[in-house]
Length: 446
Image 1 (cartoon, rainbow, N blue to C red):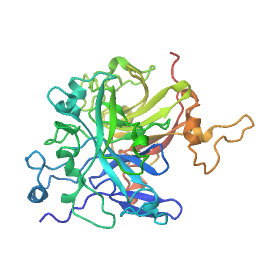
Image 2: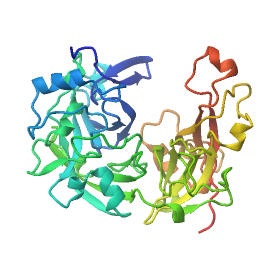
Image 3: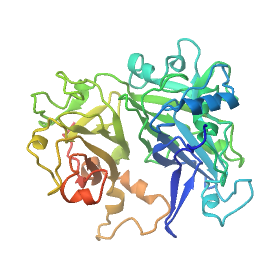
Image 4: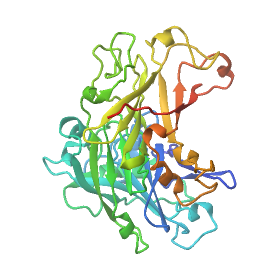
């Protein structure tokens, strides 16, 4: 039968009590990362989840059959397994409200907007010749240029979260992105990676506007990324209800295109085979790929004088070491090479060298997996006292970060080393024995 798969919830931690809650507010397709974005109001919260929409280790034909036996797709075609068939999504939750819409400031999930809310997906015109008709992956590869925009809106799903009720995955929101968005103009569709019938590239990491705007950066493992702007959200929420749609514009910062001329190596980045880090030999090839490959971790950082930067990490299987960049946002973008690590053909790996003593098992890939700007927390007054007060809830940390020049920042970076599964780690059965690193940029003068 089709029972037995529920899906993967997101967990919410109550920092005051250390209690961990599972929520289906973002549906159950499985998320790589969830970030909070600013709604401009204290009555609502908003989050952007990013993930795989059904990466459960199979395509489960019996569950697809069950779905088609109980639901009808809006175009009359059968549903297909929904993995990676999804657009960028947005969740809006009303604070201090229970699942039935009643005031509740006592329950943790209700108080924080996880009980009464709605999930939205980005949709656009999909008539012939539009980015919608082309599909998100194909448009970024074949048509898009840096700065190109796509106009659309986030549309509320028919699916509703039912707190306290456990249902099989066949009833989940994951399938609805194969339907036409409810309330949208005729000919519109959800802007999925490869249409409604095929799995496209994964969308793994998102990062919110560090300056507090209602904007979010979305990356793709296909090697492109851009920003969704939904600034009308504040006015639409002023009436206290969840809107049917929220106008939005997507701006492409980097298409899936040749980035070699945009990279500044700074005299580093030499591979063991004689190539350099302007390319990615993700299968040991020479020449390597000229585009980004499998962008995973990404963090949007605000700096002094209105400058914006993005920390970019690949998770591609680069044989000579995964690349780490600091990108300056502009048209075109500028990519400063920072580091590389791991790789089955990396000379350090082949010499069985590890940054952690006694754990090297065999040469393998590494993965830079996150970045956090510490400059707001470390900012000091002239008398040496910290500018940021302990327990601050005003958002001062973000404002302070934006006052610090990029070369004066301290950025924490995490590294997973998949070669480090030996020695004393075997008793712990870890994902990888990695490191927490501190990165201080030193960019060349323009």
